[in-house]
Length: 306
Image 1 (tube, one colour):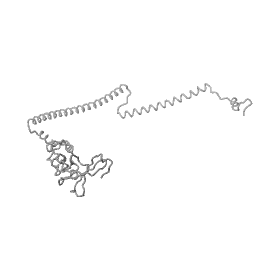
Image 2 (cartoon, rainbow, N blue to C red):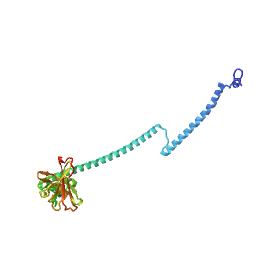
Image 3 (cartoon, rainbow, N blue to C red):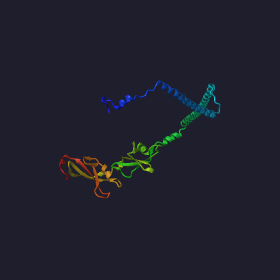
Image 4 (cartoon, helix red, strand yellow):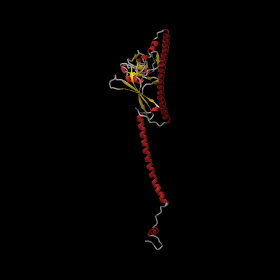
């Protein structure tokens, strides 16, 4: 409820009943009463701290076995003694470490002297071995060097011709140097066949346990026995002319197709190289071998084969 002037009941009651005020005398009275109480509790806490310190000192005395003392000179002397004890322990450990290092260094020096003596002995032995090798004509090193030079075994010619005017030879590579590859040595070793020096084989064959063999195909006049019959003109096959002939002079056991493909043909003024096709008319291997040539002929341009 408010009054006519807009003041509430609480404001009116506060104005009618003001808060009591504390006088200065009352404050001093409270301070005088509380101060001794605070001092009492402080002394109690101080006494407890002293008891704790006394207990700690007694425990330290029991552990160390000495009488308690608070003399600064005595405490300083004990502190110096502890420092000297620590320094003595560190110094002892350091001396032991230095002694161990000296012992290791002495062992290294002994090993070094032994190695120098061994090197000097090896040098002397090498000089003696060199003198002995120079003085002896057939020194072991010379024979060993000769044994390591790769050579070919006896050359074996094929019983039949490889092609027209050629024959195949084979031989095994021998004396392959230790640590070398036999196939690489085969491909890099020269040979002389029928007075002709050949730098390397045409191919090398690894026959496993039987060794590595080289193969060469070299000229052989004894294989120039095959020839062709007269060329037969088979007519035009645009834009050229088609010829055919039969292989003659074939020796038993020769490769018929190989000899045919490598035999040249002559027909009067016409000289033809190896045919571009060879074939046998019948199934038996001894049937005639027929060769074909195709030659460009402007007259056959646009015409079919006859």
